[in-house]
Image (cartoon, rainbow, N blue to C red; front, side):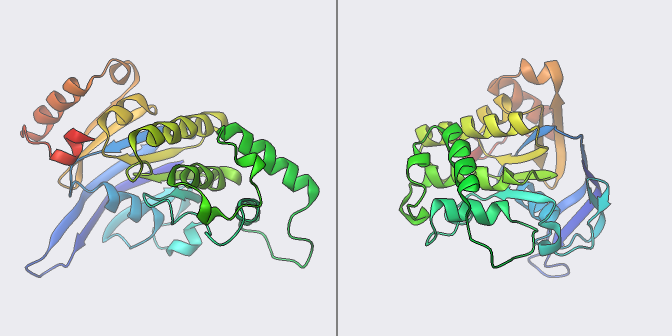
Length: 264
C-alpha cells in the first residue's frame, strides 16, 4: 500500500546550514499494516512523513501509494489518498464550525459540492453512532463548535474525520505529543480502535518508546536520516524499552538517545 524506495532529502544544499535529512530511506507497508516510527531529534521522522504527504519534494527516489506513483504530485493532489492527524489539535478541525459540520466536510472529501441541504437526518444519525464509539459524550454535543472542545476531544474527532472516508494511508504525526498523559492514553486507545476496526494502513511518528512498542505491527527506529532498526512479529511482541535502547546502540554504534526520546 505504501512503497518508499531510496528517497533522499537535503535541506539548504551547498550552504553552511546543509542538512541531509533523509539518506536513502526504503520502506514498504502492506495493506492494513501499522508501523510506528521512533527516533531522536533530527533523526528524519517528520521529514519522512512530510515527504510522503507531499509537503516538499524529495531529491531522489520514489513514493507510491496504493500502486500510484505520487513522487511528482503536490500535497493537495495526494490528499485524496491520505488521512492525516497533526501534533497540534488545532490543525485538524475547523474551530468555528460545529462537530457535525466538521464531520460532514470530512464525509464529502473528494466529492463535488452541490446546493442540497448540508446535513441530512440520515447522515446526522450516522455521525451520532460514529461519535459514540469514541466514548467521550460528543454524540450529545453535535451542534457545539469544535473550538470549545478540549485538545484530546479535538484529536479524537480529527482521527474520526481522517478515517471517515477510508484513506489508503493514515499518517499520525506525533498526534499525542501535545496532550497530558491521561488524555494521550485515551487518544491512543481511540487510535487503536479505529485503525484495527477499519484495517487502515498506518504510519505513526512518535517520541514515546512505550507507544511505539505497544502499537502496530512493526517498529522502525530512525537515526541520522536512515532506518536503523526494523522490528516486527514475535520479536516486537517481546520487546521492552531496555531491549530497544540496547538494539539502538548496536545498530548505530552510539549509546546516546536524546532526552525527548527517553522521557517520552
